[in-house]
Length: 96
Image 1 (cartoon, rainbow, N blue to C red):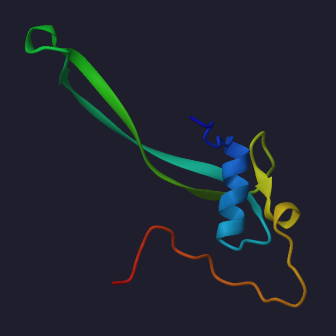
Image 2 (image 1 turned 120 degrees about the vertical axis):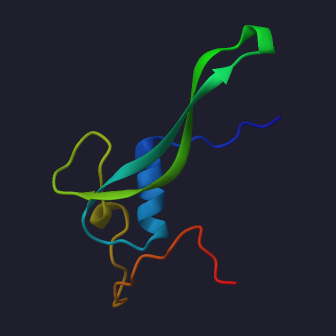
Image 3 (image 1 turned 45 degrees about the vertical axis):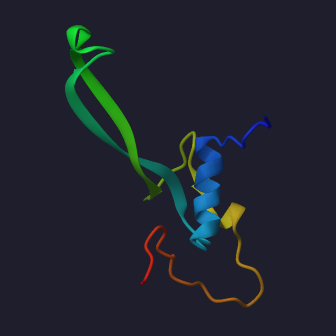
């Protein structure tokens, strides 16, 4: 079995900047989590109070200052030629 690609927070930020055609601004990765609570265990007799953490959504936050994992869109996705800036594309939403 081959190794699947793995990405750091900075890598994902760069990928999302390019995917959304952003050319200026400083961005940080935004992760939205969901939490669930309940009684869980391997058998009904062994249930314990438990918590589940799920990654619900991933996006970008525009920030004012650089930090450890922030990315400057102008550096990783500069304007090319005379192409005008376009609006970011919606990800994960289809028109049927």
